[in-house]
Length: 269
Image (cartoon, rainbow, N blue to C red; front, side, top):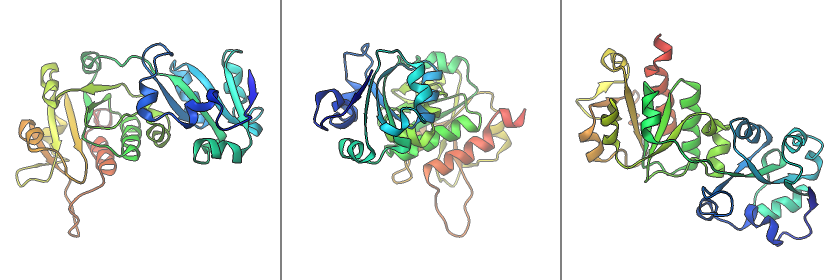
């Protein structure tokens, strides 16, 4: 059902303009798990392919028979598709849409941590990372470089934030992930934890000792404050990426990509 936007203030499009990320997560009328906003046809297609259900679509008029045509065709005929020109949609959302399409989608229940761990040999643990761009980039590296899952502590930002989803190119829908209360919980499921931190007694990222571990969780913190002393002290290994030219650290997304590449089980099979 295609509807021309008559006003950027009409209630039906509030989901794309006025609701904060927290309000989207708390939405109760879509099955109880909240909703999120996916941006760009490519990302929306990935989400739909793995079973996420669209709630409504915001689409530039020219994309209804263009980039979004297959998405609209794959949805229920009752799906509300709101449309307008590029300028109107930018006024509504506050930014220019990537490829002219947004989709509000129902969240799905997250898998329990024991389910993710039962099938995994390598995990990325995100602890205290609040930059949405970094979260998206970490997921993209985890997917591309063979990690089996991602777990996040509650001090990290939501992977289904609109910007995280876009930066990840939809890989947040492809890599199993969930929340964890404490990094040490992973020991219960047979994982050794490796905290990425600069310490004099750290193992180098290319250490054969790390590669030999059958189940290893790489714990990444923000590049500003890094991991807490409690997390570092509780880790089985403290790991560093050797640096040169007096550079003391890498951006957490870059460090994660390097760690994934170096310690991926699939790469060494």
